[in-house]
Amino acid sequence: MKDRICLICHTAIDTSKEFCSFRHHKNATEIKSKAYYHVKCFSDRMSGAGIQKVLAAKAMQLINKVGERVE
Image (cartoon, rainbow, N blue to C red; front, side, top):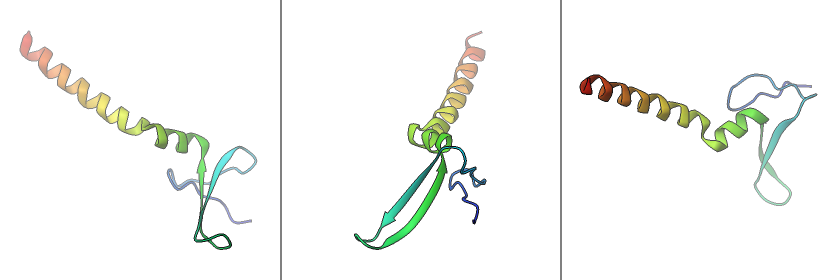
């Protein structure tokens, strides 16, 4: 069987473990596309974990700059 690739991290999915599978239906009988994701990748994408890390890093840089000017 062809390897299933996570569309978020672009690595192979071990189908013996849990994973997410989504189908885009054109109508009741036609499937337009299929997509596969690792559960962790999908969860992180839905919760915005990547964006939160970037925002936290930028906030820390701003806090450090303010701290330098106050001293």
